[in-house]
Length: 256
Image (cartoon, rainbow, N blue to C red; front, side, top):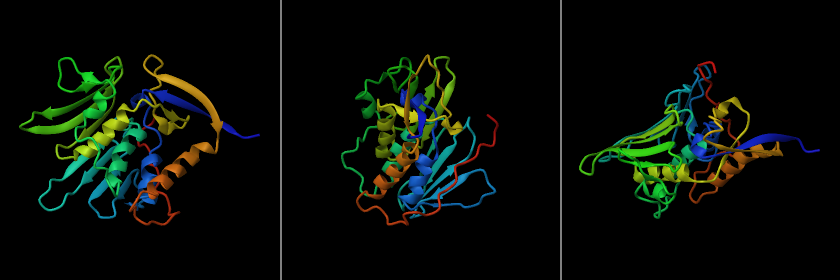
């Protein structure tokens, strides 16, 4: 008899909780060749791109910006940053990171990060510049104006107004990358979570839809393997060792 495990399929995806950080860290290392800091004495993960222009740090603070990416641009270009709260679903962060590491970026990517949201019926937020999700729990805005544009903020809250997570993008972050994030953010497909404590799910039955499905236990780790293989198969992807050591997941410095 095949051993099964309960999996929760949750929507809207932006309220599903953070998920397993390995969904980001393992593909970066195994499919994209990013190097990681092997220091086992620090409760964090640091990954650096092959060309040394991008550094991703994971600092284990479930109530703060757990993920922080800093990119050093070339001569005549501005550096930029992006950060994501601990409860930002890894599937949405993956939209951003997969676009960043894509060796052959699509020329058809939306240049306006708001456009993927409009296509999913996000509407102008009352009393504030930006767009709000149909359920009212997610808000995307850009500070400044057309003459002096500023940073981007994506904020998710529960009905009580309690913040769940926030993503921040520096004013010079390429729009195609922010568009990849907003595309993943607005995707109506649910995301799945197991009972792992790294899920950090909100699981508030008043604001989410949750469907419990029993799946073969082997399917859970296989999903990550399939993701790594798909990214490694992209045209012009770097050649990396198929089975290098995997970076550890960050450990929380706080009790939950």
